[in-house]
Amino acid sequence: MARTIIMDHPLIQHKIGYIRRIETGTKDFRQTIKEIAMLICYEATRNLPLSDVEITTPICTATVKELKGKKMAVIPILRAGIGMADGILELIPTAKVGHIGLYRDPQTLEPVEYYCKLPADCADREIFVIDPMLATGGSSVAAIRMLKEKGCQKIHFLCILAAPEGVARMQEAHPDVDLYIGALDEKLNEHGYIVPGLGDAGDRIFGTK
Image (spheres, rainbow, N blue to C red):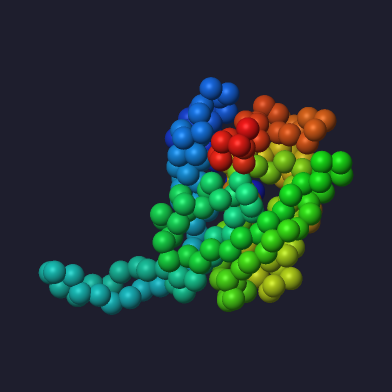
């Protein structure tokens, strides 16, 4: 059964508090998003399977652990998800990267697909879908549905902030997907933004507003 994990690590909470501030500029916001993503990824990979391998150290031979299979993929939801990708790739540099482009219709608040490019063997990989914000849940639900249609089965979703409405929608649509959430906020406002949130993550990452 899938799990929903709300992070309680002090470093994650401290850094999320920093990016919430309106005075945090683009450079610091972007760097801190990367750091938070790395810390959440550390927790999200805690249960990856390991296997025993024989190696030779400078002293002797030994049996050590290594990741079993080592086939992983990082899939940011464009465009804000890109801001989390570098932090995760620092921990998992051999992971392949795909991209799913979705935008939210301002009237219906539902996702519209405009781009999808995935690793050819994504169905054989452990998938980490990333997006800083889980608001209504529309984009993440749609992105994971697209991955399942491609045959992906081992899927994890990582976000920095989430609203209860988005979490509930994800749990209902994809009860087999683990959710790793930096902080669970209070609610969505009438415009579909997370409260208290941090504003538009994409605009703040890329300095476009």
